[in-house]
Length: 398
Ligand code: TRH
Image 1: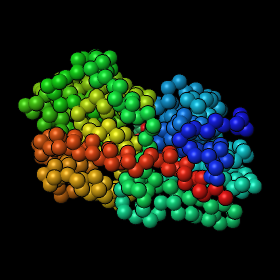
Image 2: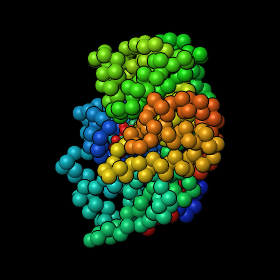
Image 3: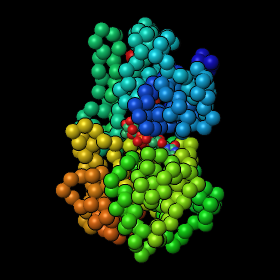
Image 4: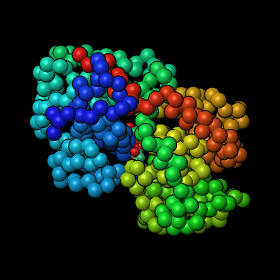
């Protein structure tokens, strides 16, 4: 399979550095927790195979997590093909010695020793990429693309950082994203996915978050508010908080409840492709981690980010870096409103609480919506991460 001739996609130039010189890619994904690791890897692998005709093997050490995002995955299969990607179960006794032309270690996951030896034994050394976490911090620009020679091995690893400016690797975005978004029919979606007409008079919200002490006060504010709020909650970790607040244990997909002006509706966790639709269908999106955070930016709606917690509050630095960067083009009131609410949602000490910060955020939503569109256009103009990665690998091949 790996040696079959590849048709060259028209958007890739032939000649020196031709991507046909790098036809086989391996992506290694270690699932640390939740869905972000596999979410990013699957999205990238799917795009590399679908848009660039690359033979991608995606090595995953936790197929059960992957199965939540990839419909029809067989948990027992050692190898299976989905959307042009060969998904391999990454076992502790890894023994594959067919090192690929490009090797991506997602989020610095350690590669199996036997595989590293196979990489070193190749005449043309593989391009070894460490695909890093997303951050808006300024130091990213100085580290993106840096080589890291590997002690004891004739191999060089390269750091590839996603990011929000031209000095970084950009963000994952599929070539057909705009067309899919334009074809989206929100009325049909609300009817089929939520089982109700699209509520035109209500503020519609999607809620994807970790456990959060700010949730109960926020739900109280929405329930007491003058404006109806319809909040759609995909099944997941936040449901326990929701159950505690509502006094209704065991909430599951399909359940709904009304408290004052607030209607809560629990939705199933959907395959990754379908998650975009939830974001397009709502006025305000609460997202978390990394991949959903990026998708909410492409959806170009106001968003609230529940950042993944790190030791010594390192995540708060990342939160502030993004707020400063993305908020730069906002008027002061909208910017302050966004900052105060995001800090409160992430449990920042010394600031406002979530309930206190909500009215200003609500008032700023129209401005945040317009700004979200401008921000998405700005990010799109940088070029997408997969295309940038291809260019980088063509130059880095030894
Ligand atoms: O799940 P996350 O919190 O993931 C992570 C991990 O914790 C990881 O270790 C950490 O490093 C990282 O965050 C920062 O959030 P994330 O990144 O948004 O991933 C969720 C994925 O789940 C994303 O690809 C979207 C997808 N998804 C669906 O496919 N269907 C759904 O219904 C929903 C709600 C999400």
